[in-house]
Image (cartoon, rainbow, N blue to C red; front, top):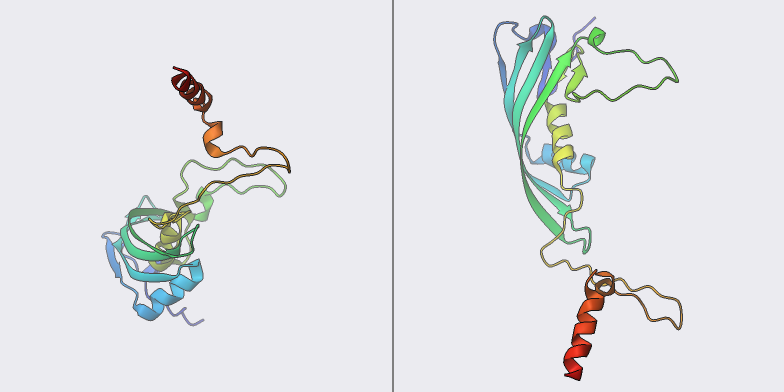
Length: 185
């Protein structure tokens, strides 16, 4: 059976040294960044670099550690204007043999493990996939441009004075009372 062709950032576990670290430095070109941006829903991915190492861990496990740096452009949640964000994140993933993971019976409940960085070990460790996943997790959920203003939401039935945001503040009534007393004196 022919061996699978590796993509950039993929490492065959059987080729990794069990005595020393294997370094990696991923810097996708413009076409690859555009494909990643499309894949995860960005307007643009200006810069992307993921550097690190894969090291043996325990008897048969591996640890991927690295540093992710990226400059992303997302639409503002208010105005849809482009919002540029710089991301710098440390990344760590544990790749462990399948027997380290509990098999859940179909239909049974299972608690989420505290360590979510552990993944089942396959034949290939993909630093590229770790990079894209880490980038996706590091993105701001609600990017907002500096000029974006939400304004006031005003809701009321016909003939009723609408309740405004400042009316719901705990001391709004006291401030109005103070103003009335100042006017009388």
